Length: 503
Image (cartoon, rainbow, N blue to C red; front, side, top):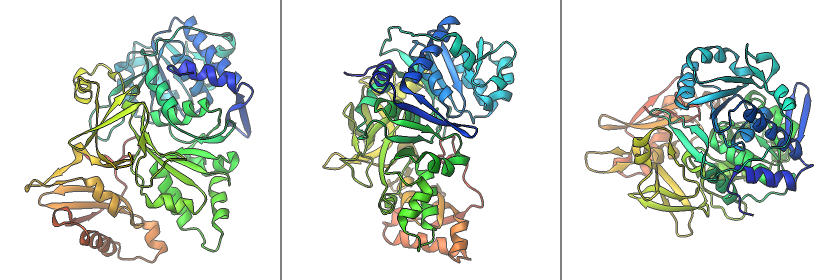
């Protein structure tokens, strides 16, 4: 059966895997389990709740950390025919206020992290008529408590869903410019889930680590895992990341390169006398076999490094505007260094090296931003990603840089700063790097890894970094050589997706 709505996904998985565990999460000292049947019941209660409040078809914002309550709120919203607006719980209050107003939100479902913010929202967001707290202790005067409403509204719910109707409004958190509201339909998300090839058996234990308001986590980590009958363990905090790996012992997880690099540093610095399987068990609980990586460039050398610990890293590529996966490596078809082959529902072409995508996962457009929509989507439905890339003879896709980041020299030569950053950034001493044009120089600004330097007795960090630059330059044409080095004392400013802000 072809899945064209999120409702199709939930109906199928809750029928096929009814009595199996869908979610595990920590509540105090206890681990709570929810079956697929309970997931359906709870999400349908949310739909009935929205119907009770005459909110079906409206825009419903969901703000909070990853949780079972967040997930049923999302599913209940979109499967009622309403529009879910997932927002980043870590955003400054003023930015949240602005996004809530821009998104025409009528109701807010929030968790305990937003207690202070909600008071301000009531003053500056007059369009919001209903406030629903995920926990009893953060309910506001005149507001509602989700657990209580779930019981009051218990019962089945069914409504016809238009697959091409807007169901999720996701705001990008790019490194430059104003956040854009990406409009995704049921068909966009459901066909993305169906087209991703992931070979795992029902009951496979996965762990959800990434922020749930991101399309990568929501689509690939939650919806895809549910469609396969996975047992999804919710990581309640990055502070508890290592503890929860040991507690849940997942076999599969989704990570971004920043987290993978952090774990790599821990494994790299482990006592070499300890067998690698023992080290891996301490880091990941002992059962992890697959890491799906996305969201940014991953050093291909790390793929081989993790294989020594019995863990396969499968790199993919996507963007929110594509629901989000465009291409991915999988267990039967992968190539280190590439971002995999395009999904079956994604057609790829290149426009002056820029990757363009067409297919059922491409967004409807940007909410109330017609000029930006026209810039990204041409008249024939091709999405211009802004990423530069190439495809090899076997159909594997590679990213070479960002179109808007290109450095264009006076002699007409073009330099992709990402190409230089990725090459120099392989050095262990380089923790973060940004390459830019500075006058007549190509400058590398580097935040060094002080811990690595201390452990390896490096006292003259600037001299050692210059050696790394010099070795890099030896193999590069003159116009691509880095001619200036700047050292930072602090990390670079980053977006909420942990990408360095370039400007």
